[in-house]
Length: 465
Image 1: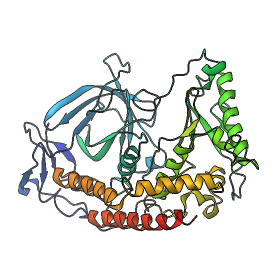
Image 2: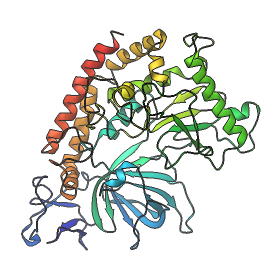
Image 3: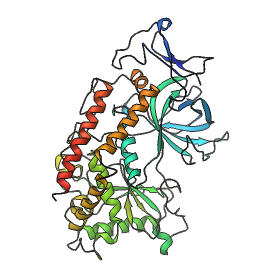
Image 4: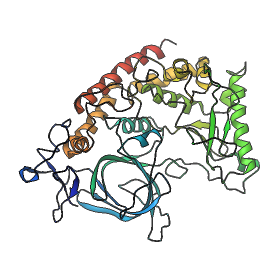
């Protein structure tokens, strides 16, 4: 592996014939909010970072090609961890994301491939073998950790979420900052572990699963890729609808019988939830869903006041001969007080009440959650689960200790300051920041204070239903 140097035009380049990772006292260890200016590299004192402290280094070489939104282009990848080459091979890579594409720091999706450009399953940095991966690029989230924090909490409480590793990315020999290597959510024995539904399985119990359905943004919705909820979202003022998108099988692979089955199942669940007998334990909504998964999903979205919660990046899973469950969670970079619209920055509002605050937004929250909160049994289960978790996984000490661990890792590796030297966003507004800290410690202190206040508020609200 070769370290980086900044030349007189502030371009990050690799230096040949050196092996240890370095950062530079006057550059990468200086103030993260310095403006861009020319640096005389002959006067920069090199500071070595011990190889054992460095984050894994991911090198992607596109051989001069620009990475598009789609389709994926063929490229090369190598990964070094603590000075050892742990993976070398080929990938197909593209830019991914929706609103994040406005940012100069791009995030990428990639598939591991062989020399013939065929997909192959590999293990990267100790994560289980698969072919589909994501390089997440925290940018407007200046804490760098919001997704990591909530995903770690989700796994702590027994709910699968994407496993991940902090890395540093070098794109075509240019340092591109701190990234997070993540598992792409998909049906797989090591990810969303459900039955693989074959195109020939069109009747009987074979037809019952597995399905993955999403409530999420699409470039366009039609009868092939999605279907519409039978009940409009509450409080909406512009005739918005809730759309369910076919993910697995997708719009190409799903058969008519399978499409009709999963649509009918969700419609039946919604009808039961909307009925006068919705609280009935035998004939009400609980006959159709894994209620415990919905309780945990509620807790994770409300803990973080996820402004996108329930209405975007929401995954629904129906396995063979199983009830409908919700999750895994996904995309919390605007959570934990990092959104300045629809009260996304507040710690004292319910995320599931989004429609009341922003009734004109195109993407609304389904009626489900208001209805759940009218059910004494659901509220009782929520209280029990919340209070049990607050004594352990959701204690203030547990959550803040996780944050301290991430920050300590960035400090010892130098990756935090290197990232903010590459992307000088500290002290600047980046959509949709609620808080703008002048330094990284200020961003972390804001996040910690917000979480502490949120926990106190939720304790009071949940226990006084």
